[in-house]
Length: 264
Image 1 (cartoon, rainbow, N blue to C red):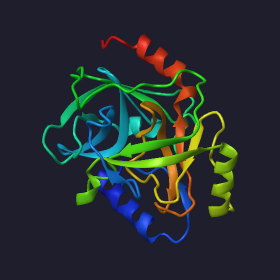
Image 2 (cartoon, rainbow, N blue to C red):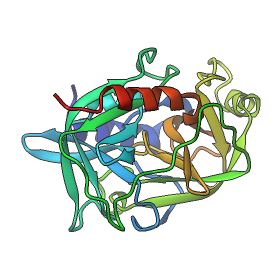
Image 3 (cartoon, helix red, strand yellow):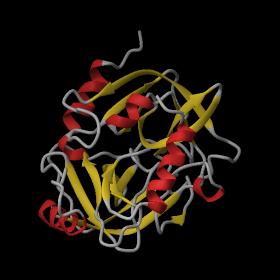
């Protein structure tokens, strides 16, 4: 696997130098987001990839309980550690935990495919406090409308890209609207949006970007989705944000945690 730094440099070239929009789920920061605090969103976690003892944020994640975090399938495969409890990943107070086991949804086929969800079982239990708390997740089949917020750290290789940011007022749109918006931007490619797996949002002033993959889409305290992929270059006008729809995976999440509740 390429090092996290090589991936980062490649993504910078894509996000800021590419002339044409395209699909990607590469592991930069929420475009147009504003800084927030971990106390506001204590269920947010960071997926870390380590090289020669140096660990960097590559993806977002969501705390499910003291022993489990939820992220995308692509991020779960690359995860080595999980960090929690800080608004700034370069600041003090970060708690880092090793991963005991990885569980990726069986029908996830890598890349931009559907079913992009995974669970990470932690090697030691988290201690809950005002900066570390479990998320509320939806029930199977639960539907949502209105607006939501996405929260994430983005990449940590530039000074402004290691702090927790929020993108508010993202309007939930239908998958038909999502596909139509994508078609306007990428007319020659088929949209990877899957009716059973995905939910989309739209806000012309704010988009998800690299490093946000696996991070939460939240509405009124419930995490209803996790970032799965986005339109590259980041911040493309009119580009929807695409998430894994967690209410379609609630049974799998609960079953996986129940069946693997004891670390052997």
